[in-house]
Image (cartoon, rainbow, N blue to C red; front, side, top):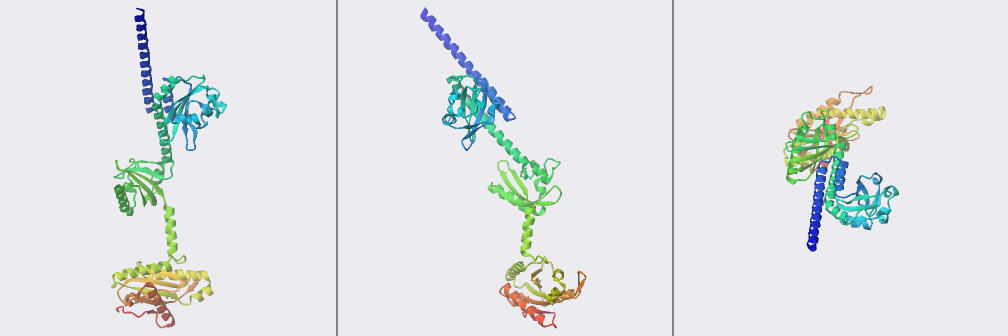
Length: 471
């Protein structure tokens, strides 16, 4: 009978232990579930960490808690904490911390015996005697959750087991903290960037933009507007071609285009565009490069134009002459002519009236030449008082003579230059493509010789190099 009573008592105790264990498991499960729900509704890092701490308190008794995160240099810093004294503390990874980060929870009965804690100032350690360390796995860098108590040997094997069961929730909290941090940094960059950023659909509807976009293009009253409506008419076709290529390759592309800014004019933008192919949503970062484009064009213009007169310079003239030659070789029946001109007695004018008057005369004569030909013809200054004209698409010798007479007639009208009345004449040498020149250099040389012939023979207003062009 005594044996039966002992068996019955043992059975009752087993049932009670099972009940208590079941109660502990249920409490732990409820704590974990509560923690997950609280973390899901957290709107800040502090709320998220407080939810984690609150759920852990339902499982383990502790006083303070903080998360240490490792950096690339092997140091550990505080990511979140309830313990103000350790907020800015720096920790080093030694043997115990390396073991914890590898996945083994460790309870320190007395922190004064742990090297990692020994390196901390008294402001951190003075109220702490024992600590429990739980390793966490972040998305990029490892971390650990540390909970502390003012009593020595407070944490034992039972708390370690509970910590192991709790670590997935703590890991989820770390990942959420990292995600929130990344989102904050992204949003901060997105809003503070001086670049214009936006998201648009395949129809061009802008569904989101940053302050940089508003600063550049203004804010559309009907939601965000349409990016295609911002395009300069000449840029619409190449822009759509770039989008089509992007859709085919699913890679980001760089597009230089003109977009209408909020003042109403058009500026040049360098646009980096990427596509989220599953939903056909496009991300664009647009940077205003108008000043750069204008400066680039200025450099190109200066490289190809005479600084004084604005006419094409020798290098640009040679290039234009070669282009005309290429076209002539394709269609030999299309003839063209080359004029070589200089101002008679220019040196005397320059020496007697000064270089300023000489420069004004060269500019005035340049205008005379431009007014004497068509917009498609090319007028250039080779240097000094030497000029050239490429007459494109001439039909007969009469066309050439008409232009030459027009130039001499305009020169007959005196130029009024800074209280000086100056009348000049020009010697004109002409060569035509009908002579069968092999290249532009030969043709220029022939026109130059013809000009010197005209200069020596005052009786003829101009000299045409002998060729077979029809009268």
